[in-house]
Length: 298
Ligand SMILES: [Zn+2]
Image 1 (cartoon, rainbow, N blue to C red):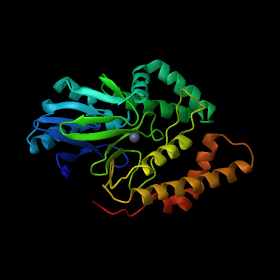
Image 2 (image 1 turned 45 degrees about the vertical axis):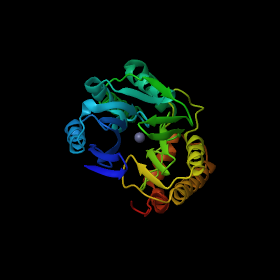
Image 3 (image 1 turned 120 degrees about the horizontal axis):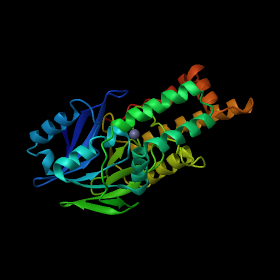
């Protein structure tokens, strides 16, 4: 499905096999040329869907000259390599996101590191195996791609007559970037701010000192400082009211932090143990009113 969201800017909804069932890529046109923001998941029917949707606005995959990635998660970057092969498109992402991709390419050392990291968090061997299987599955869904150059925080890029800024927003994923079209106050948010759920946060398995929540909250502040009029996320509806939504997500994390502090007050626990308590004891229900919002649909 393709939906026009602004002059020469379209949302393309592509299939995804799990959870939210769909992911959005965004296409900006300039004459025959297309810049894609994210590329969707590499799965049956996704490439054909992208092809059809581009055809419906008179473009081909071969017309894609530039690709910008918000982050290196399978559902956002999976088809990048395939599109590059067809169109020779230039590719831009943050250096940190590119490093995630490089780690993904290094199968054995990635698995070894993941085993070490999750075992240290108290995850039982059987569940570590399940995590490794999931990582292997994700690896198989990302076609290798090659970056043209790296984005820098706050830098202004152009495509045709349109200008947009790269806003670094790590937290949901290492190296996550949002794209801000200041003339319209329009934010392509990737998975940084979602309408229905607080985005999951990712640890850095190579750096245990990395604090995903602190990093995420700082990244919310980076968006709060911008005059955002509308948010166009990687999943779900586009919506107004960035400040309200950010307030809800902050509220969710504050409540969750309170809960965590109570839990570790009882005695030392592993990250895995705490996760089990939150998910198993119904505590998650107490947080659910922070998860769901009713943003103004655009
Ligand atoms: Zn993601």
